[in-house]
Length: 395
Image 1 (cartoon, rainbow, N blue to C red):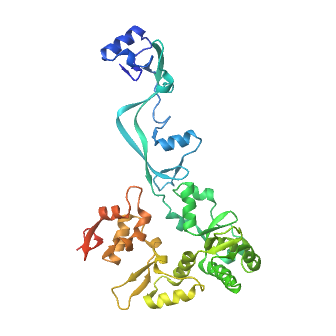
Image 2: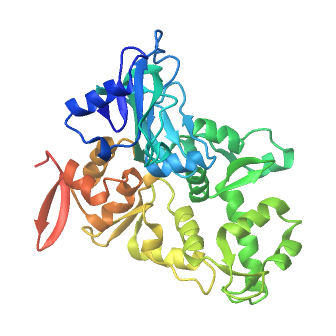
Image 3: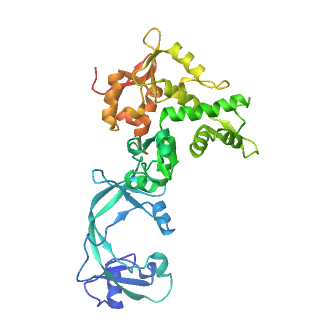
């Protein structure tokens, strides 16, 4: 039988007359077909799945591979394997099909067959038959492990020239994320590099470096949207390791909106978040008014604090009098969505979507956003016209 110019045969013994007979039996018009008929037979020794694997990819990935990009499989022995492109991560699983998947190395595709000419035969050989293949599904990168493996860098370690830490290459080998997603994760974690390895600065060391920088801005009466990087580095390099100092500067200052390459603006939200996080020590419990007053006094003059800057770091209890603020960090919660929801609903019996979003969003997927996850795994309730979610099987 011929399908799109392919005829299955037991031997290389088809003739043009036989092909035309097959076309007639299939009730097809020869004029509607390509002029080339490809006769397919099976080689004696078909190779099996140990010699080659089949992977189903999207058109975008296929195009990027054709352009020279690469794919990487990542995962340690105790982890499931994921597949990574340059900027995305995919779940990687074996699938089965009831259809036979034939490997034909020399099959001519539609655009190579031509439109005109006398009918002719070309012989093709099946090298392998498959019923299993690998399929991929886009997923969020598994970055939670970064917090556990990135070493905390203390001032004494800098002075001693520590040999600890992980290179980017090593992190790519142990973290299930694409290169660009790993970069985003390292940025979110506010890592710095020292001797070509990645670290998180010990909080008191980071506080000291940041305080030196902000005090220098204040001493020079610079507005927070126009501070000078080069002058700051030159003045403070003897107080803090110059390389560390520059990276802390760039963590909390961004290029200003002007033509001066040396002019930067203080990132208000990041600076305020750092000081708020520093004050919210584990086990701390403040009245809202006391914390807000203390927090505002801790940041430089000209910066304004607000609780949105602490999303994912704290809980505001409005049921107590006076209102209370306590540390409740997303990074301390379980990475399993079911276990995380159990902790959340033990902490608070019902959550509004805005309040719970910072604690759920890191576990969303390309197909399940916060609302979809909560709808699937929790129970919605309506209180005075406002939507809340509570434990699915709670009272």
